[in-house]
Image: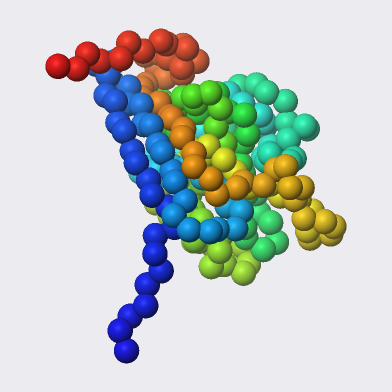
Length: 210
């Protein structure tokens, strides 16, 4: 019997624009190729070395927030460790998302790391676990911390609803599988040399092409 495979669910195109300042703008176009149910998330996943264990962001906080559960999280600048962002639900699952993020930075103990700037807003989460780790674990003690930092920069995030003790998410919050374009700006930086807030406000001049 020949192996059976499913057709690709999405067609994705990535355009990278590299600037002399060290900034990289990633423009993403996502097109569904077949019928799909509402999506859990839509964005980029970056795998960084585990030593990048400090996290700062300008968005809603300090606790987790989601599209349908964020009014209790005021917009501000917040800081903590990557470990602090993990929420130990009885059954491991999606957790720690931050909504309406303008910029986020992941750095090491010396303040060196990566700055991500939204164009204009992002959902951001950061953990020492991958999503499949949460899916595979039935209890918190089954989670094994990875020696890496997993940074999610999501254009869209699914709502939570209250299905554990009530109705599911409202229709208006669902992340529907439709053609989508979004952009993210990345820049290496050091907090000792410059501030994330100032760098995030910089206006980039598009490189000239021949």
